[in-house]
Image 1 (cartoon, one colour):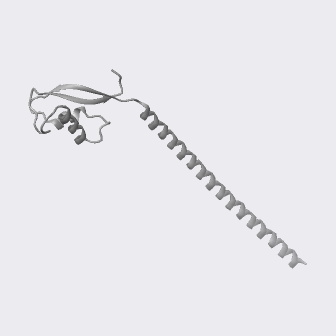
Image 2 (cartoon, rainbow, N blue to C red):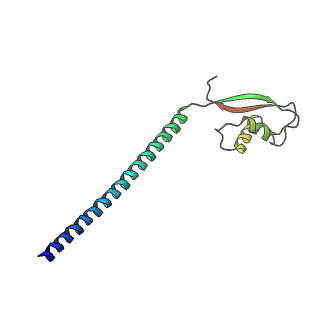
Image 3 (cartoon, helix red, strand yellow):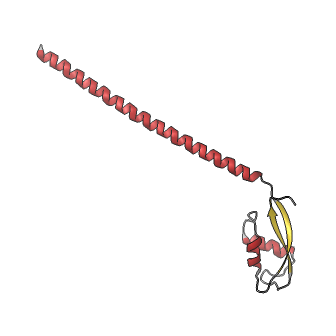
Length: 127
């Protein structure tokens, strides 16, 4: 009978050890799932804030204005354009092309000191 009691006791110890391992595996899996949920929640929250911020930026109206500028000695059209271009223009070339068109210039390379140019620009301020 003692051999049978030893087997029973050994089986109980093995069963408890298996149960402990299963509980530990369950706890690890639960921690992993909770960690993933937290990361997903933070990512969703961050993306929502960024989306909201970009939507708010898009809501700010932008008005197109024109100003006159007198060309100084040694200035180039690209240097002047670099000071007046705004984010609404997709490239410097497009902005310079608009200046050339507005001012009926023959070439963007040919401007003279003292020449008056009309320069477009955008502003969120309503004037």
